[in-house]
Image 1: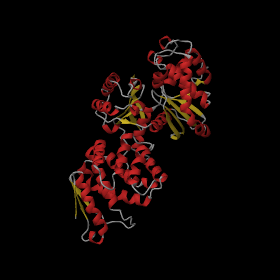
Image 2: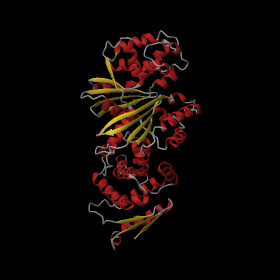
Image 3: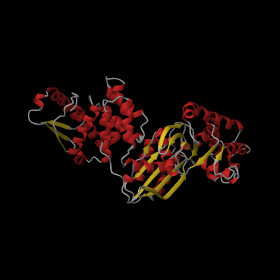
Image 4: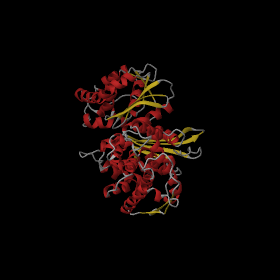
Length: 502
């Protein structure tokens, strides 16, 4: 599969992490293959605390978030679109009106926002830690966000286990400390809820094991700072189990969040401290953690490093595709035949259709995965493929890109129903529709699954009319394909395009 070139050393690269508690901006420069952070901004937005009874982001929280993004946008001048990535996490995964909010955000940022899945968030967090805190040992990395907590076991730059749980300092504050009152009862309820979240993971994680533990979030940073200020770290700079127990005892002495008076705690951290402490205590107790290092590297750094890797020779997305093909026993030979033909059709039409490198990569990945649904059933396998690609955890893919991939595979054969046409256009406009048509042609040309290669067909298009040309007399000796193409002409017509066959 063609690779996109590595990012050039010149110019800036930036990432925005729209977290459930804080929004972060990181601007860096590539220097001999390494990232040099030039600017880092962070604002407490508490997006996860702005969900109403219907799980919609309130106008107030949207305005606060958009104001923050407006300030971030002032630092993005001169950064090329392919050197900027903006991701959203748990609050945007659960909010019912995320799309409405994202339209406003993208208008300010002039760039799409990717709402990433929990395991993808975990992978990127691990990558940020791995590049910030070098180690040869097996590590358990934990990141407590506003709405979710990610746990990753990995070695060097490779995650082994990665999970995202539904517990965060903002969501737990809303659930257990909404009135600001601190009580033993509320703390026990919060810790119990955290234990319930961890229960399904414990067996697998404890069996895999680790040599060291690293915390990478603001929650761990705040508690480490307090522990250091009080001398509870004993000069190590680490957060220990005994320090967590002491912090828990100290916080429970206060009756209300507003009364918290601990050294090293910033004012804006007090509101979520009890909830964060309940989660930390549960993590230490359930996982048997004795001591924890801290890393400043987190999601935004992981996104930056992923952009570099995503444009190099080891694209995590390609590894995800290969893994999916192996997991679902895809016919590799057929997949490669269809991919090669799709690449040939792209060479002739990508310029006229204004398909960029991301578009072509998406189409070729869809070509490789077009039969993934056969592992479920040969009947309607394109529908099964759509489902698998839409809901599987695929490292390196954002949810919007996974949706596009699913739509391509789900509509590579049979009729394109009006509701599917609408879904395609809504997800990717005419670009995605044209990618779909190219994939359909590539698959159709290999309908017979013959090992011998087809003649190099010629394809011309202006975006609305596609003309497929075969060598003289070739179609006459392949009547089944000729019939398939006649039916495909009707499909093209149903979505407002024309297919001519010569």
